[in-house]
Length: 229
Picture 1 (cartoon, one colour):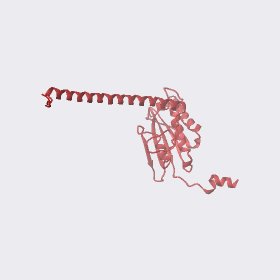
Picture 2 (cartoon, helix red, strand yellow):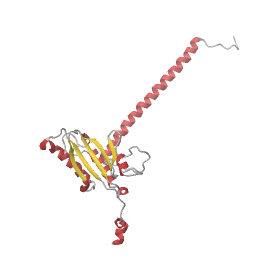
Picture 3 (tube, rainbow, N blue to C red):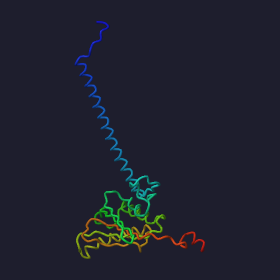
Picture 4 (cartoon, rainbow, N blue to C red):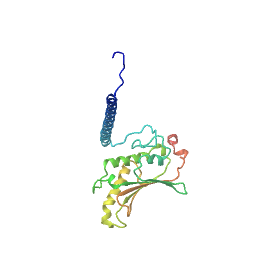
């Protein structure tokens, strides 16, 4: 009859509910697809970054540090001191220990798996490990920390308390290679040493010692040297 509105029956209401459910399922599928695509892009970008790091030794200058998170394998601008700058080179997955003694000397030690430095039985340091050592040297030689004295001890872990001379020869070659790599990054040999840590298999401990910083004498500055000349 004209002019009379018909009330929707139960069948029509069910069709509306099914349409809404279908729309929700489509939206869920769409967001799952977006998430899958974003994960794929992350993997691709990681592969590209690794390729660039391999080609350019991975040292990417950090122009500004906006947070305490790791920004790049290089000197972090804005770091308060040398210990903080070194600490920012390593992420939370590695055991990093900082301490201080009564004489105000500061200590920092990091344990890194030997497999991160060497492949198989080789005594040749991998490219990524060279990047890490280069980043450490960049911090220690940074002009902001010129008045800070330091010492670096590289302690190579051994299987047992005493593996004998023959058992230590591969470890000696690898420890010497680590020291040589840091010397190649312009660190003075007098501030470097290598040793062994018995019953500490599978890791290399890098131990940093920082005596209290001394003020630069007036005659030691670059300007003073030019004036004397």
